[in-house]
Structure formats: structure tokens, C-alpha cells
Image (tube, rainbow, N blue to C red):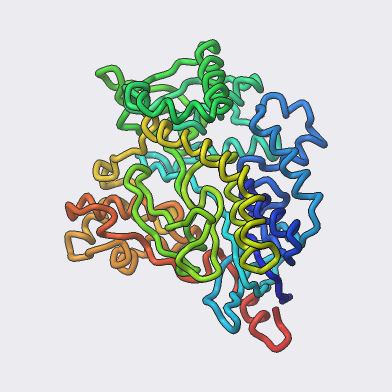
Length: 471
């Protein structure tokens, strides 16, 4: 299947939905390619189904999740070409007339759509947490636990322990407690002194008052629950033979152990940059966030002609800010298409730009309260950092000692980053280990190059698409 459009939006989370709606309202022929089965992205995952089939669950999933129902309704009300279950695996270089081919798989068939503009709204990925035992059955990411809770109402059985740091871990704890799911313990790796670090950024954060209020309520809910919270934890290790049975860590001046059947790990999120890299967008190291992120202008524009980025894929800002950013990018593309004038674009975007500015005031506050970990250099040699290829931290260090100057040379030697996830679960860690081993900054050593396909695709799909009359 092939086709053409004015614009392709990749992703139907808050940013993608808002960008697509703004484009469609302006009269653009808009195609939305969404890997999920329904709109909402990770933050509003399955919200239509939950509201229709499990309405009682809306209460424990919280007001931030419930807000997504209205966002999805507004998206559904706009006339556009929405294609769920479409996994995008390449964004091509500009061709004739500056059009780009976007290649994707859907229902076992590979297809392409050509567009003058592409809006990448793929959101964020959870930062990998490579600790001893993290590959044992029973070890999950907090996002995976939350996805199961939203999608199917499934929750961890036995003794779940939440381990790590960041707002998502706190939100998951509050959701599980509200659903009356017993939580065995919370092992909080946030460095002590969070309030003191963040205090000077509080004035800017006050503009996002509802978010702060929800955070305060979640903290109160955890404190009232009586769930043991081990603050200032470090040196996490998951114990067990065939599966997780306990979490060991250092806290309060000594070693501690908590029994567990399931461990939800989380250390914040980073932008998903696979497609933006394929599209040729410039990326830079973001020192406060300890990640690489694309260089994005105020309207979502990038260094790659015709490519815009909206939402957390351009920098972590949260769902509300992502929605405003999506509308801004959509209107910018509509203006480039000649569907609205510059003055009309500015007028329509004024409210979204103001609201996004206010929401962004919260980010420095959160970044200082929950700083990303800087412990890659201390990962034990025996810990796997690439789960797909089972490459250990020690093997990466040995490759550096043998002369590998950067992650791409390490990749060629050890195959880390070549598995099904294409480096999503190891790129950040390999960069940090190489940087620490060489005594350089991550900005200097760089990260994996991304090559198509960015997602798993069969040779049969590619062959069928390449055949005469194929997609």
C-alpha cells in the first residue's frame, strides 16, 4: 500500500494527536501512523477501552489519565487518516519536491506514504536501569507495570517492590495503592536533599500548579499507606536464581534486603530519538538530563528540511506541554503548506505557546529534585548492559581498553545495539560506560548511529514492497 499526503504524523500520544488535529482543521491531508492499537500514547494508553469496559478503573488511574479521554475524543472528531497498529521503521531523505517516504509495517505488510512534511511525535523511553539481576524474571520497568494496569487491569501478584526514582514511580505507587494492590516496599534512589536542590526553581514551577498539587497528593497517599519507603538507597541488586526473590541495597549507612516477587525499576525517561536520527536531525548532549536530544526550534522545526518534532521526543516536558507543543508544530506545518497565513498561525498558536511556556517552568524543578543517575561507571563488570546480545559492562570496558574510541566501534566488536530493540535499552548505558572508561564526556564519545529499519521487519515485507506494484 502506498500513498501521498500533505503531512504524516508519527505517534498518537498527546503531541501527535494535537499536531494532527491542528493540521486537519487547517485543511491538510494528514496521515497519522500510530504503533498502538488506539490513540493515547503511553500516558493515555487504552483510555477509550478503559472508559467503555472498565469505567470503575478510571478512579484509581487518576485525574491525569482521565483527562486523556477528552483529548482522544477531540482527536476522533477531526477528519483525518488515522492508521493504528502502524510501526514506522524508516523516514527517508527528501526526494522529488522535498517529499519524504515514511515506511511502516501494519498487519504483516510493509507500506509507504510520501509527504511534504513529517511530524515526529514518538515520545519518550524509560532510561535503562542495568543493575545486578535486572534480567531475572520478575524484573520489569515501572512503565511496563503501568501499561498492564491501563491496558488490561492486570497488576503484579505477590510482593511488588518499586525501586528507583522519578515522578512516574511515585505515580505508579499511588495508582497501585488506589487500586488496593499491596505494595511491599518502595526503594527510593533519589539522592537526599531533593527539596533543597529544587527550592530555587519553585517560583517557575508554581505556574504548573495542578501538577504540583497532584504530586503532593500522591506523596501524601504513599505516606498514609504505611508502605515502607527506603529513602536514599544506592547500589541496587536484585537477588534470586530462577526469578527475583529480593532486592538488596545500601541505605541508612548499611546493607538492607527486601523480599520481592516483582520489582518495578525506574530512573526517569529520555527522548525516543530513533526516527529523528534516521531523518537526519541534529542531536546534542543534554547534560542535565544525561541524554542526547534533537535540536528543536520554538515551532518544532529541526535541522532536517520538512521534519518537525513535537512532545517528549524533543525533550522531556510532560503530557500537557506535549499537547501544546503538538498544536504549535501542527500550525507551523499548516503555515508552511500555505493553508494559513503567518498572522493566523500566530493567533491560533498564542494560547498553546503561553500554556506550554508555563508548563515548561516545572521541568527545572523536577530535574533538580530527581536528577538522573550518574553511576554507569560503577556498573559491575558482570552486569548485562545489552539484553538482546547479552553484552556485559565488563566486555564494553575491555573493548575500550583494546582501543574502541566510541559506542559505534564497541557495537562493531560486540554487537551490542544490534538486537531487536536496536539499542533502545543499551545505547545510553554504553555511551556512559565508554565515556567513564575514557575519561571523556558523553558528548565527546557520542552514541550509536541508527540505520533502517528502526523496528523489526521481515524480508518478505521488504521484498513485497520492492516488487512492481508493491507498497
